[in-house]
Length: 315
Image (cartoon, rainbow, N blue to C red; front, side, top):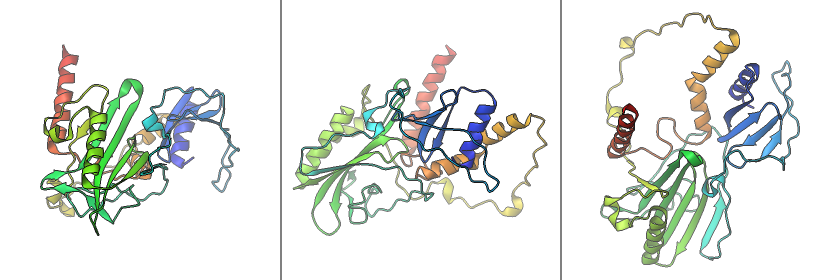
């Protein structure tokens, strides 16, 4: 485990917790102290673990880990989030399961059209652009969140056109937010075929028609359409930075009066840098939302939903 994860696990063990949950390499895990098993929150696969002291050099020996067949899932995983897939019978489709990466590189976006090509589309990245007709951009970012079923998943649909010639593809990627997920690249014989595939998939996932998306209505159990802003900068980012001389001097924190284990736990919970390091491993910029930069209208809609919840709670 990484240092922050080890500290979190050790704090839970020291305080007599039965289990702790943590993130590692972009995946969620739950460690059961009684059974000494680590379970993947998405797949339910369990592996044995053991607790040992670190060597003076700082390295930690690890026990060989094998999947436990007797491990039971705590939460039923959604097929679109767990990474399971079925082979396609169509010769035009090529599906592959996305792999989670542990590199610390930050996700970058590059595009020549009105919307960026999904950076996970390695076959066409840098060779194609998102097709558009005037202000009609054939790019859809969908999201579905269901707390009761532990779902927080995305679905990307893009109609892509090669830069060098009139050749069209439909790119789809789906999975749990923050994960690479699965993907499907469909080679289309014509623009009309590509549009039909795009519109059908959009309708299947949202129960809305693509040409009528300006009047989009969320259907229970289906995906919602997110309005994404692909502009390079926020309005706030154009403001001149505060001169260093005007910045307030940092105030040294007072010595903690808490017990050392409690102080260590609070320090870990409040460690913003540790949070940013974890999400950086998940391959997205910590200064942007995981699904992209939302438009002001989308943020306003979210704020309106929160106000309704607040009103219900106050009644």
